[in-house]
Length: 271
Image 1 (cartoon, rainbow, N blue to C red):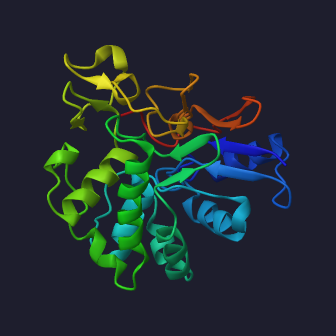
Image 2: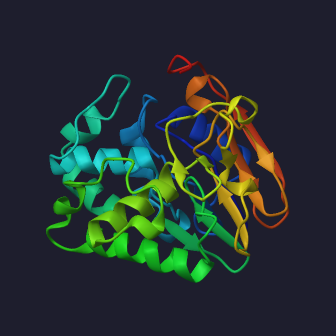
C-alpha cells in the first residue's frame, strides 16, 4: 500500500491521469489524498469529480475554496466569475449526486503522522481546536438543508478567532483559515488580500507557517501556487500551478518521494 498527497488539481484531468499513471495508482491497494481544489479553472472538473467519487475510500479529499465555491453556486448562493469552468458540473445530469458527495468531504483530515488541509492550519489553533472548528463546518454541510450554510459564507471577517461571536462567524473564519489563508499579521489575524510571493509581502505580514504556531503533526497543503513546492519537516506545500502551465505534484507520504507531471498547457493566464 502506498499513500500519496496530490496538489491542487483544479480540473486538470489529463494531467491527473498522467500523474496517476506515473505513481502506478491502484485503488485496490493505494490511497491518494488530494489537498483540495479538485475543480475550477481547468477544463476537466466534471471528470475529476466523477473519478474521485467513484474511487471510494481510495481517494480521500479535503475541501478547497474552489470546491466550496462550486457548492455555493449549486446551492444558489454563489455566482460564476470570470475564469470559472464549473458550468458543466452545474449542468450535469449527476450534479446533485456530485454535490451531495462533495459536501460530505471534510475540511481537514488527520492521519497518524500528517494533517491534510487545503490552505493551512491557523497558527493559534492546537490540533484539537482545529479539528473541533472544522467539525462545526462539516456538521453544517451534512444536514438536509445544507444550502443555508452558504448564505453568509463569503467575506473576510472576522479575521481573528477571538472576534467570531456566532456560529456563522466561526464557520466563516474556519473556512477562510482552512481554504484561503496565506498570511497572518503580528496578532495572528488572517490577511486574505495579498496573494503573491513571500518576498513581496507588505510589512507586518508573515506566512502562516512561519508565524508562532502550536505543535502539530506535519501539515500537507496546497492553495498557494506562488509559493510553489515547499518541503519542510513540518509543512509540505504542493500547489505547483498546473492550471498556470506549471506542474501537478504528488508526494509519497511515507518516503517523501516527489512525482511531477507537466501541464499540457496554461489553462489560465497568471493573475
